Image 1 (cartoon, rainbow, N blue to C red):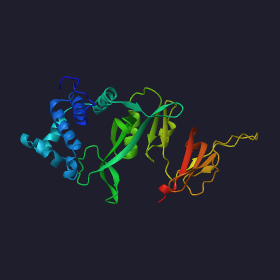
Image 2: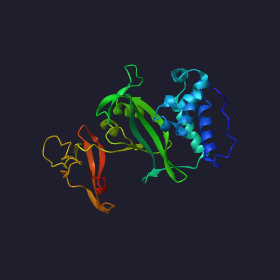
Image 3: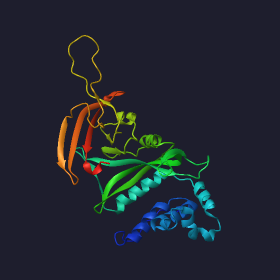
Image 4: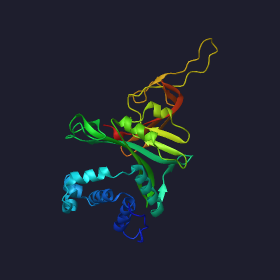
Length: 304
């Protein structure tokens, strides 16, 4: 493990020295063997060599490791022997960006919440056997079925750098399914410096995670089209008996929802009129104490 040093170059002068300084600051705290292998992988990915080898990492890195007479399988073993924290690497990369780049956090709403995006990715392993590390099962569109895969969920902090919106990776977690990977990610969120808005992709946040949202960490996610919600109960009528917990049933994804929206607006769009409908004071039947605001947007540009 080498000693941490500061880069003496002007980081804003040229993108190549900037990228080199970023990689150097990231790998210099790793064990020597692991740092060498990770550096080779970064060179291959940042120079576009994976395109020439049709995504094969082993063929792409071969010219850089041929002189070692190892073979890529031994390079992988050397990387496995190096013990280091991936969370610490992400934290170091995040801190380096804040210190050396003009980073502006993206904040939304009256509370100026910092936006953090959570998404999952399925990396198909068609030739993998039972010894696949961190393996799971995910749907492959090309195969048309569920196959062995590595399923990873990533948390990124949405920022603006030089007028360009980018995401700084903060955490990654693997799981046997998208729901499990996202659940592990929620369990290991980095410390918050202010109020956050966690934006989750469609259907990968569970009802329990919506119920666990707080004023500090609000949760915004897309609902599945067949989601069933309940409205607020009717006001007390004064009759004897237990007051109702739920109101009317609402399927916001149907062509004709059962309940009239609280707010309805129309906006001009490129492909036609955009219709916006909002229902407030909704809840899941299993979690009546968690109040949800649901917004449905019908845009002709996204009709299939």
